[in-house]
Length: 328
Ligand SMILES: O=C(O)CCC(=O)C1=CC=C[C@@H](O)[C@@H]1C(=O)O
Ligand SMILES: [Mg+2]
Image 1 (spheres, rainbow, N blue to C red):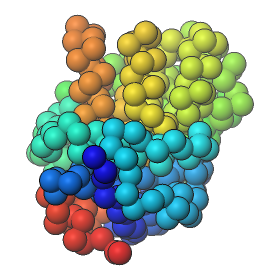
Image 2: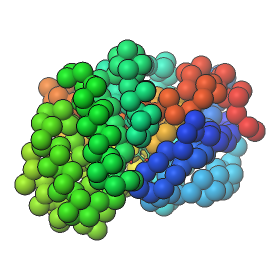
Image 3: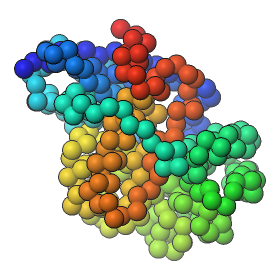
Image 4: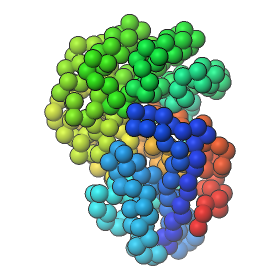
């Protein structure tokens, strides 16, 4: 049986730029893949590149999709170079979406960490998100001075109910002294800080490993393990902290699952600011992983990023509607 392959592009301007140590991110560009079988049933997948994390660029992904034939043989995902991990993820997802015939599944907000805007805006936003059921909040640090950011986060912690958990993400922007200052701050706030994500640059992994033994607050790696190969390398170098897994730029979800079945690492499936199509694939993956080890406590998924976009229909799970809204 042959499958009919189509793809369309999207670009979504953030309501406000995502400010991280990497800089300001204004527009998320990606591709939605559609596969239709001879009975007219369709499946969808998403390619959401994140080049500053090491994936291919949007243009490289676009060129790859453009050179794919419009008819693909069934059950065989076209082979993709390892330099195109977002395309690999999207292609495997679109085949799985057509062949598993699963309807959209939602995630309770309590199981989903939500990324807050920085500074005073976070103080305005959290009450409504708490009202919507979110209990895990994520904040970016390493952008302004430590004093200014600690003043802001002391205010936020002073307002958040005790049941809330806070994740901090420095995107590798701290030096060792700053990382120690932040870890002291986290330890002083006890259990309210779930983890400190990527405190230092990937090249400083040995220092981060040492810090992980010195402080109580768990440390998570993100940029350090942005590819499956890097993740495996850090595991074999003894990393027993948290792994923030951006599966949508990690290539084959099946290969990730094989690794997890052998080594059930402490992971958080993390968003790359994808649309509802990519988010569904990530939720499905998280469920598949959790079902392999139902007795292990699983962390809230890092998929609370929809608020960063206007209501453009690309956060909805009516796939036909979503497809119609896309640029040809
Ligand atoms: O992981 C999450 O909870 C939300 C996603 C998120 O924080 C990010 C997504 C993509 C790029 C980064 O700016 C940022 C991250 O570093 O984790
Ligand atoms: Mg991160």
